[in-house]
View 1 (cartoon, rainbow, N blue to C red):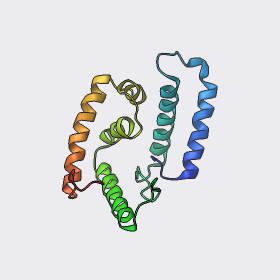
View 2 (cartoon, rainbow, N blue to C red):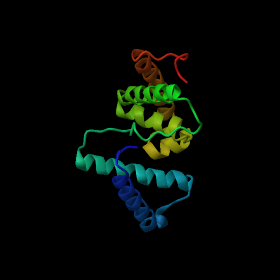
View 3 (cartoon, rainbow, N blue to C red):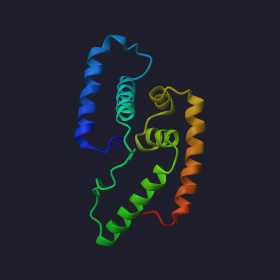
Length: 150
């Protein structure tokens, strides 16, 4: 999602797992293995983005496929809402985007997110709280309300 290119994502995944293999002896067991690997993937990706200095597009808006059969009208509405959702998220500052991605989209716990971002638990909680308020304001600017979401 961060690099918006499947081939680059595959390359970064491969680089991540090479780092995992080379550095498995440094894993202390202080966190879950999944968190440790995700932290390596996150830092590998951020390093790549910093080196390349691209315009950051965090989401591929065309990759959605609905799970249930829906009418054409529902699919158009859902795709439009999804695009507005990600555009609103993209308007937030990067730290807010990151914490929402990890906690609400990826489903990591506060402790896991704090390990990945190298933040304290308190900073993750406070940032998430502030990020959700800012995100709600961005959605409302775009005309979203609880009633308009599918």
